[in-house]
Structure formats: structure tokens, C-alpha cells
Image 1 (cartoon, rainbow, N blue to C red):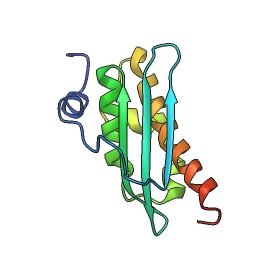
Image 2: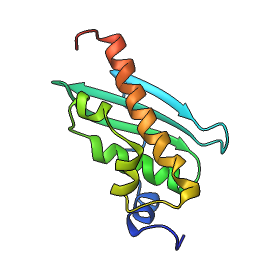
Image 3: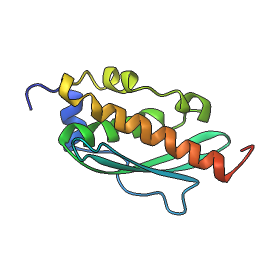
Image 4: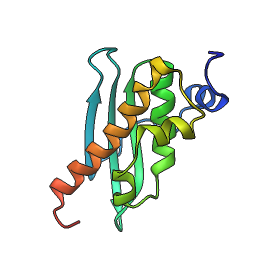
Length: 126
């Protein structure tokens, strides 16, 4: 794993926020049909902010690392800020990813945005 930053390795070896939020306010599953990586995100929202973000990912080490990193990164963010999360912000924040693994950051960003969209659908005006 020498091509990966220390932070990618750290989040892969010691993932944070893995699992599911019980009775989540929002949830989503995203997948990359090319590589087969799959990520499920569940969220709890309090006061317009992401109070809890949990994930379950089946995929390569960078997919697991970016899932962990992204969940930690956005916790406490407003829904508006988290809805604007980009793959670039995740990839840069985790110390970069090889070109053939950038899709892992896309998966994490898409899943978090989709869970927020699910929350908004279930809680109009919330």
C-alpha cells in the first residue's frame, strides 16, 4: 500500500464510524458497477446538522478508507455544506488517491449526498 498516503492507510487499518445508525433519519446505498464497490450510509440529523454518520462499505482498501474519512469529515456539518461535498475534497483531505482509485472518493461523496436527499424527502422543510 506504498502508493497511498499515511491517512489512507490509517483509515483503512482503523476505520471510524463503521456500522449503521439505528432508525436513521436518512439512508442511501451507492455502487460502482465497474469495480463492484458498494457503500451504504445512514445518518442522524439534529438541528440541521449531521449529528451521526455511519457507513458500511464492501470494496477495496481505499473505498473503506474514504468511507471512514468522509464520515468523520462531515460529522457536524450543516446539511447544506454536506450536500456540496465533492470527491475532490475527500481525495485532497485524505492525502490524495492514485488515479485508478479516485472513484472511491466519488462513491463516498455520492452516498453522503444521497442520504441527505433521502432525509429531505422524508422530512420536507427539515
